[in-house]
Image 1 (tube, rainbow, N blue to C red):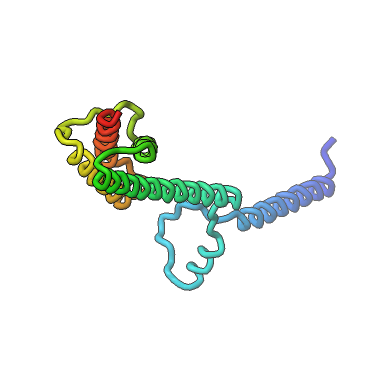
Image 2: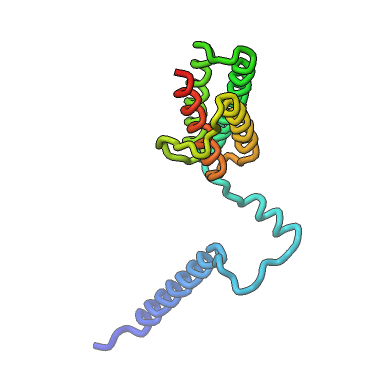
Length: 193
């Protein structure tokens, strides 16, 4: 009725051997785990640490990097186009002023230039973050020749402001100058109808 002592010893030996193997395997597995990321000790400075960090940097996927580069390239292109518009606005205003001073009037070619000047100025204002509302001109000159001169000065000032403004900035000064120029161009166009 009592169990055989040899069988009991054999079962006990097998159970102990299994327990030892389980402990050995779990210790080996635990040793292969990476160290915890938040270590209470500061990192060790040295060449080995720097090289290890350089090799493990993750900059993101190549697709995300390419998308970011394309976005930056598109923003830069838009900014360059806005600069070109500001230069054209200044050139058109100067041409219309010179034409008015030589002929003391506005011809159909100058009217088209004034229309283009207004359209480009509105586009500059919108690119700068302004609204597409009608601009109201204040303190308008009484004489037509003064209005043309002021228009050329405002256009030159707008060009300088656009050139100074970084591409990621919403500039109230650019919007205000563009609104003044739009109001003045509309005033000059109505004077010469």
